[in-house]
Length: 238
Image (tube, rainbow, N blue to C red; front, side, top):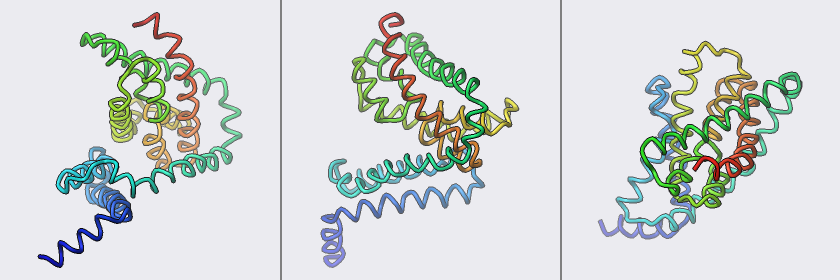
């Protein structure tokens, strides 16, 4: 037991431990999803978050210490986002042909995502701070936190809501699209990228390159549209 404790003390002092745990939790989520036949509730992101939270609580590890190792994965989010330009470039001819419908869909989707959150908050008599926290739920996390902060929301809670929105969108979005008989990969990608940001885009890439390209474009443009439109509407709506 003393030897095991010495090993744990050595490993816990290394940032590579938390990087390894993050990658292992993700792989565990992928394995469970495959074993479950791709069931929407067995989402790798959700599984990885649950596993990591349990481990951090069990070992009494604070988030700052965990992030010392996990920051390497965080850094790779930048190159991964830029890499979305590759499928987009390959489908540029489809994007050009679909430009009018794409613009209308993005504006409608951006407004629907924000207004639905505001409406739900109003239905439950939430205050302005909580409403501002929920309003940018469908925007990628860094932009959503910036919007929420500008509107007087709680940025840490916004991050949680955004991640949950992405997980739910990726889990149930494809099934809802099939039920609605939306089979065009361009429309599928636009819907997932607009409603479920990066996690939805990752799911769209699994569905095909066309869906992934349009999802990546929708994720970026929805963040821009929401950052412009939501503050303009805020004083009027809330």
